[in-house]
Amino acid sequence: MDELEREVKKLKNLVQNKNKSQEELEILAKEKIERSEILGALKFTLPGEEKFAKELLEKYLSAKSFENFAERDTLRTLIDFEIILERVKSYINTETSKANPVPPVQMLDQLQKFSEHIEDLKDKLHLTEKEEQKTVLDEWNKLKAKALAYYKESAGCNVTRCPECKKLFMILKDMRGHTTEKITFFKKTILYNKEMYSWFDKGTITKEQLALALGVSINDVILVYENIYKNESKEE
View 1: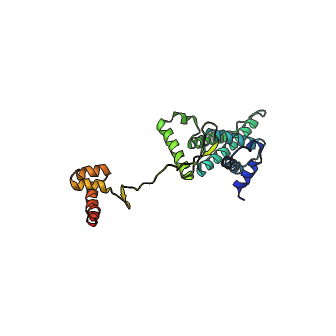
View 2: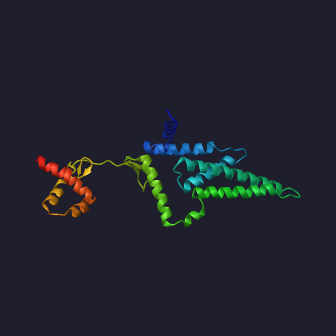
View 3: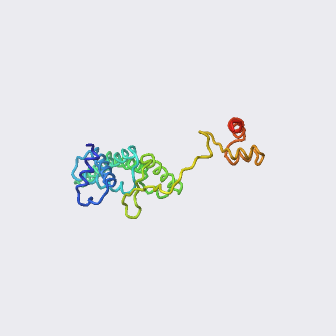
């Protein structure tokens, strides 16, 4: 039993999941595993850091979805740096609260560098307010990339989610009443329609009109006419 199956089994036993389908449980299980992987790679040394990391993770996951390993790895790095930044802030607060405090110049410099690096990571993950200023084209490209990533992972899948209730359901095509017909515009892999070529042969249409109708070049029309249509006509 792999990790996903074990997690699905655990979730299935919870009361709040009793009406969820197998597909919904698998989605929840994958999300939980991803969270555990991100948090498991972080190093907590001070009290409260794990709680802080979980809060950051939930905040960022609610802001957007992270489609691939590279983005999730960058998110992990971002949270790691935010934890370190909090340590630096805590140290500076401790030092400046002492009697006759000496400003920790080196730590202030580190604070600035960490802050800048964190902003760079947020920009990379599109988590800053600058994202609100993106054009419609930028937003469209993001949605397009997300759709292509989903298609790549779920090609051929007939399971979808209801936008109203968020539950998963399957789309099944009813083939009753359908009939089969021969494809009349191909001969093997060559674009070809015998009836249309007969119109050209009789002079009803020109080779230019036939090429335009089939979406091919005039040379293609002539080659197919000479090598396929004429041979078929001889055989008949």
